[in-house]
Length: 130
Ligand SMILES: [Cu+2]
Image (cartoon, rainbow, N blue to C red; front, side, top):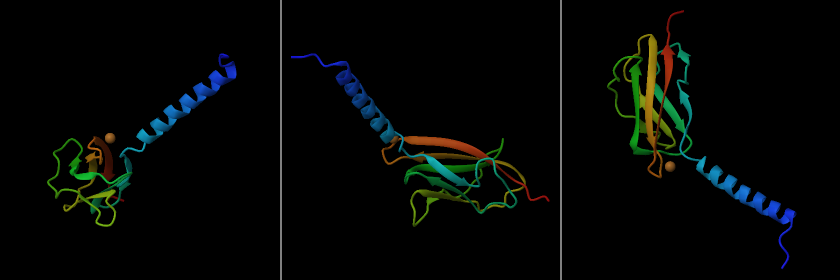
């Protein structure tokens, strides 16, 4: 039997490369934060009524939490964040207190359907002064 020529080896390597790429693409579809309101680093002109997080997939709420704290302070005592009733990829923290002007931090944790937990944080500012 003839040994595979250079072209045959090249095609085999390309096929293997494509396989790896496809597998990597599947992993990239894991739960991630897509968007938030307030947005990261946004300055809002009024105390927000909610902190809303949009995820790429519906998290398991049992392993999902959102905390809000003045930067450098203690987490505020708010009711636990809940999934939007019509869209479980949206998680809402109701801000039942009026936020004074200043810098705030949102610290979130979300559990993917596969049980993995991801976490992150971002800041925003409230400035009602004109
Ligand atoms: Cu995972």
